[in-house]
Amino acid sequence: QAQLVESGGGLVHPGGSLSLFCAASGRAFSNYGSMGWFRQAPGKEREFVAVINWSRSMMKYAESVKGRFTIYKTYAANTVYLQMNSLGPEDTAVYYCAARSVDGIFDSDDGINYWGKGTPVTVSS
Image (cartoon, rainbow, N blue to C red; front, side):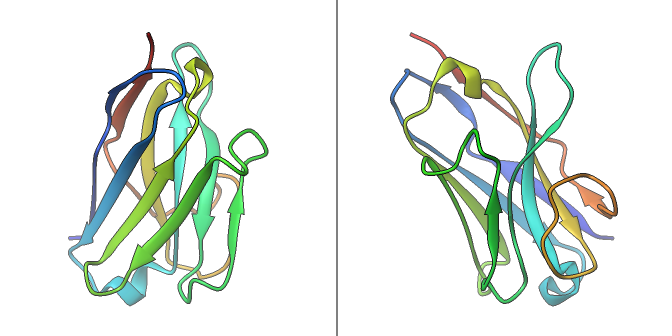
């Protein structure tokens, strides 16, 4: 059974950095197509953060994180990473890993086939 498991969340001070990890299992990594991250802040709707396609040739970021976050993945580890720098309180949210069987770039949850359970990130002094 396909499964995405996030890790790496936690408490960080404003201006700090954090790395999130999403380990994919249960099916061949190549069958996941494009993978990415969403987040949901308290009292707000879930929003797109970043996505990377299968070949790693295309990435897309939400405007709010562009220049601060970097998404990448390794085939050997079947893992997608989200490096987050210059974090601010507005980045506080539960971060979810997502995968779509169809390759390409997405910026909404339409067509997402798999979700992780989320990892919380709190940015506070």
